[in-house]
Length: 404
Image (cartoon, rainbow, N blue to C red; front, side, top):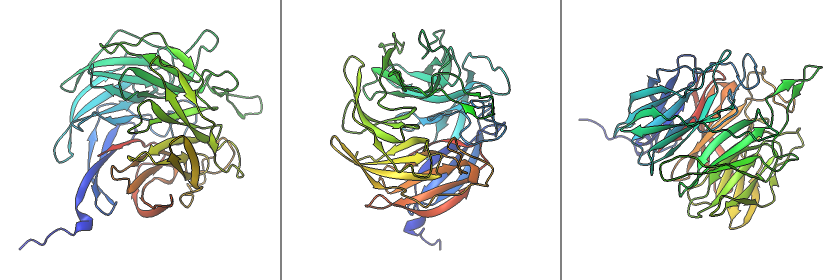
């Protein structure tokens, strides 16, 4: 007689990550009730990742290859999954079966040629209202391209969109996000010019939104999914990186700042204009910048978890109406890497990148690329994160987390 599955081992959901290896794959994990993960399958995207190479900086091997977020997304209803292939500038689509398994449906070029060792396609946003899939590239001038989607099949549109302006002609955006009403596409800008080297070999970085207050670009969207003229907004802090809308609060979102070392509450109005509160900063005694980049916002809209790329840690915040405050900083024990990677602040870091919070707000999952591990954390009421389990992943290259 078959023994019943222990409650803690029951599968309650699924989590997806891209390997971003040269032969790119989606790694599919089953999510158990106790927060642990079990790898189910690896499904080829048909496209290429960048491997350990970091195209934005030109580093031969480093985590966070594209300085971006949202490279793996699920469409509403969790029946379709989309992923970028940054190595060859293509996008793959998958059918998601009832049991979470994936079937590759299509792979199409973004229309942007690859120059050098890798492309830079890196962030996706899907509008079910117009069946439009938007894809963002780190390098322009055609930062944004769009596909028409039908039953998972993708058709590239002719339109090309840029986040550049008259004086900044080589900007590096990080992420694109749809407003909940699907009327606006928001894009954070990390750098106003492509990273370069100073004479002494140090990084030359021109951070966006400092001092010019134009680091958040908002595109109005028409009913067909076409983008209108961009609106250049003050992002609320230097080096804006990640936007997350707060559930149940239309127009309200949190923005994370890699160089201002904190997060702020922002609001977009009916015309696409954005206002932001003061950024709440984390402890930067270890060195600046923290490179606070990725955010996970709880389903109840009361907690925010920020990933600090430069420190190998996370910070938790409480969100109460118009007030943000730090709960735990750091919220976890900082995770060491293999000692080969240094962040902009000069600290040796494990280079944590994308995170994902379970729908019940009970568990948080975090990629630590330079430590070759995906860690599952139990979320405590006081904002601290207790490690539940570790799961081996590829070295430096993995990115993107999406699940249900």
